[in-house]
Amino acid sequence: MGQAHILVAADTPEIADELINLLQRGGFQVSKADDLNTPSACDAVMADISMLRSANPFGLLKAQRRMGCDAPAILFVPRVTEQMATEIFPLGIRDLALKPIEDDARLAKIAEFVSKMEAERDQAAIQQRLAAAQSDLARRLEEMSTLSRIGRSIGAESNIDTMLSHIVEAAVYLARADEGAVFLVDEGAGTLTLRAEQGMGEKRAEALKQPSRDSDAMAVLQTGKPVLKGGDTEHKVKTGYLARALINVPIIVDQKVAGVLAVYSLGLHTFEQSDQAALTSLADYAAIALDKVAAIAQVQQRVDLARASAKTVMNHAETLLNPIDGIEAQVDTLLSGGFDPLTEKQQGAVTRVKQATGRLKEVIGMIRQTISETDKPA
Image (cartoon, rainbow, N blue to C red; front, side):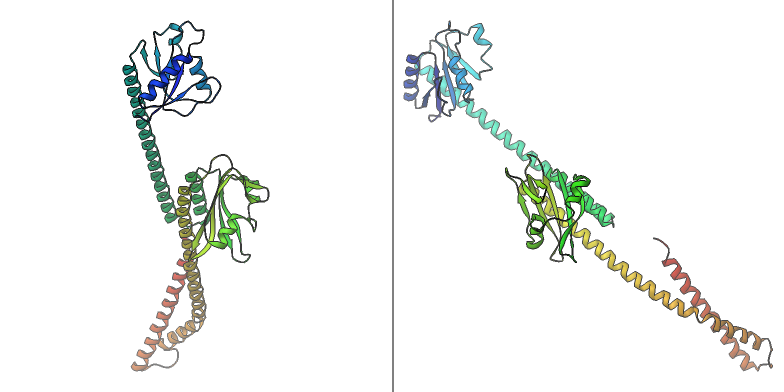
């Protein structure tokens, strides 16, 4: 309290000097206002008006406001004229006291005013911190909801382009970016290729189809470390393609960089570490998507190999049908006595041959049906 800094704005130099001496004896830091010099930072302004007939009684206080002083003011005045009443609130006068007033009463009034203003500032600071905390919590919940939605989407989807589109859309949304992109590694060329984008448009997407060798995306590919850039200067993404701020994070699959997730700000908005953290989580989902697609491809390859093997077996089995038909014809002739009558023992043996050929044809039919069902679209 005693260290509060008071700016004295009195309409006569004599009264100003008296008030400065009084406040200094009361333990306050004091500055004297004038029309020409920028006022010092202060906790409160004490405006003292004696000349009520002045054409501009608040002239000195107005000058302080024009020069940037926004500290709350307390007014000491014999009475408030109609003209003054219209200017009190616009000038940031928060309290007033009528003169004449005893020195001790003036000091007490100033101390009470400063204490009240400090309490209001503390309350405002608490409310600002609370609002900031609530905003941060809301954003964290929003990120969790978005990441959960992306996880469910990846679980239900098998098309890699659709999954990557969902991921880059979420990246732009969470980072409040203007544009976003997913680049995947071209193993043969050792470069990155654009696979999904959001907000770029056809021309810019075509220009960024393959980032230049000196781009941040390629640096992420080589180092495996994320890049966050902002500031007042623009950053080169590729020749003819600049961004005011950017984030590039690696997509890592099996401990190797398989791609890069990037967002770009083209205007005044910049990115923070929290944005990079959100993109890192999304990059993990992109890695899950790529891993899932690779696993599906491996399973499909094994299915295709099994189907090809089954067809080969079927082709070989079908070559047996004609010989089996021939055997059945000969067996039927034997059983009908077309040659010589058979003994009971021969009859039994030939009958078992007929049953075996029938069973072979059943097995071939089952193989054919199984292959036919696997060829049907899922």
